[in-house]
Image 1 (tube, rainbow, N blue to C red):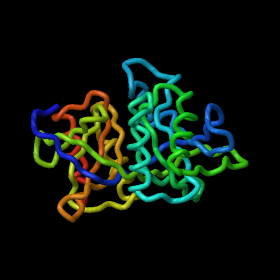
Image 2 (tube, helix red, strand yellow):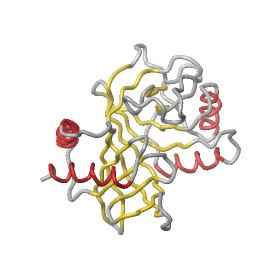
Image 3 (cartoon, one colour):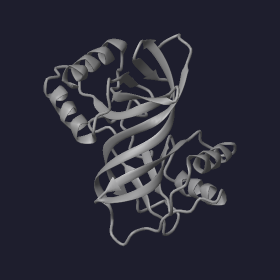
Image 4 (tube, rainbow, N blue to C red):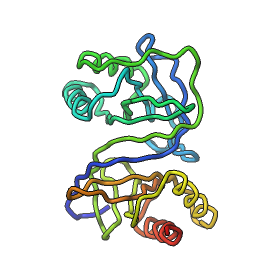
Length: 237
């Protein structure tokens, strides 16, 4: 969306999604969660048509906490030979008052690739948690650690060069999750334009942190992102 030089950032995102246990097409006795609708109300995240045979967001639940270096090195090695140009990043899922360390995976071509990917990670020394006795399904708060490649067409406004229709804007201070939820509800209640999905997070910049909000909208534009930012900033104190 911009001809400016790309900006690379590392940071975190925090959002809520409905997750459920994936029962089939996974390595035996492993715990895998999926987000069948990662952006509620939007059905064309990867395509202009509804997709029901492609995994959207998959969470491989880990046996223990691995460092960012361990996950990044394993992923980098696997990407050299894996058939699909998948994206993976470490994170934490909180569901039912329980916390699970995960690898979040995107951009797989089909569900049958999950077992191959799990086998590849196991070959890199990554171990997965055993499947629980009960099926897990419900709202989860998810924190992911990720690298961003961004364009900044206007100061404090960013577009993601990898994830389509993702925009970000800086905010003046950190918000708690509950405060963010409250502000988001109030913005949407007073929003007359098409619906959006929001998450909160931060970028690491010059040995410090820049707090930001991520907006997903299928027809993202600079004007749309400006207006969303204005509505949020009016309510952030």
